[in-house]
Amino acid sequence: MSKTITVLPGDGIGPEVTDSAVSVLDYLFKTFHHDVRFVKERIGGAAIDTDGTPLPRKTIDQCLASDAVLLGAVGGPKWDGQSMNVRPEQGLLGIRKALGLFANIRPAKAFAPLIDASPLKRSYVEPVDFVIVRELTGGLYFGKPSERRGEHKEQVVDTLVYSEHEIERVVEKAFQMAEKRRKKLTSVDKANVLESSRMWREVVNQVAKHHPDVAVRHALVDSTAMQLIVNPGQFDVIVTENMFGDILSDEASVITGSLGMLPSASLRTDKLGLYEPVHGSAPDIAGQGKANPLATILSAAFLLHYSLDMDHEAALIEMAVQNVLEQGYHTPDLNVSADRATLVNTSEMTDQVINAIAQQAAKVN
Image (cartoon, rainbow, N blue to C red; front, top):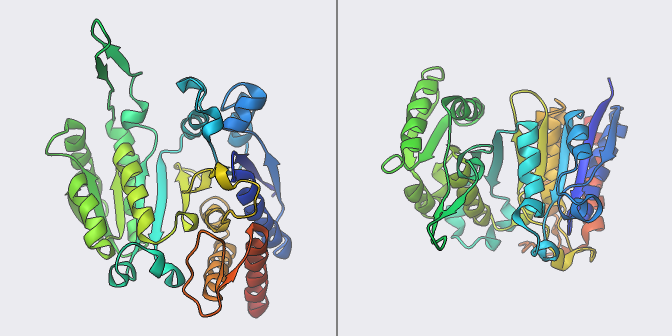
């Protein structure tokens, strides 16, 4: 049966890195005779310029009709003057909500050739291999509209809202992930202050009864932020609410040495997911061939794994990226510790990944 991947290139370096990921996927699909087609649509600033909105209805409908969505990045200073309702970032929040993508998966894993680029000591970074599961469609970012109060609008109110169901479904996803990893789950909240966090703990404890093999630990968000720096290797799966997850996952991204290496997946209960790099649109280097495509290529591996059930092909991508880094190939953002480091551009890095996949596939065949 034919599959469809909707590609949302977005803004800045988004078109470049999504082109790279599509090239890698296309090579795999042709090699293994998979019938998969790509459809491009607009989102973010590119959609504002053409359609007057960061998320056209056509884009939503196409994504809903697809098996998976691959996103580049959105935003840039070009659209800084726009009102909040038409900013590029509203397209990203909107597509997550429209598709019901409630669980954001962000891994933090140390790549040996990049460890020296981390601001932390090598001994801290080497054992790092954890995943943050962030709730994506609730909390402060999706409460009732903010309002300013008082005669001179000197007060402001934002609303943090969660239902038990919203908490339970993302916590269940995190437990399922922990069962396939090292069976350790850290639930992060602020239960000493927030009632929403006290409910969060209650739900985690209830869901834990169905996963007796997983060791559960509750932790406050401020303590977790500190522990991510002083002992990041202790974590396996971290699950937390929307804003805490946003902050902690950005902190975790620095540990491994480069934002340009980190993929992400936004999932729901079925196979449809949205896959994107953690990095932003980097408009200052757009169109110069300097963009690192590896985070988007690794996001494509997530796509194969979670949405298309192509685990073998996903593993080939992950091994290829590892091999390319070990051989010393790097884009300008990467500090590769290799005797013979070779600086390459976006297109050349993509070609190296495809060559590495071809070599791995040939060994298997």
